[in-house]
Image (cartoon, rainbow, N blue to C red):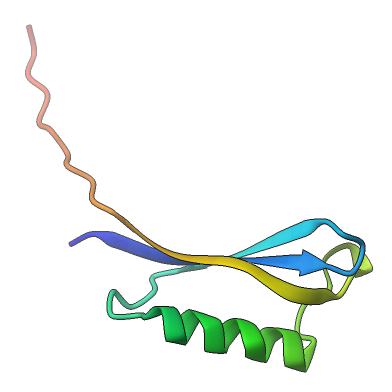
Length: 75
């Protein structure tokens, strides 16, 4: 099963960007879900990295990574 994470990038009050990553996101997360979550985070003023409030949405992604492990043999 692939590892899935949601990544949200916000504009901060100081003009810099801040990235919030949520591990173990549900694979069925939609763009609307990410948008709604980002709106809530900004509205509730939940995070203030480096004492700078999040002011706007920049981007959001759902990233799925599949890892394949290989058995090693002795030569």
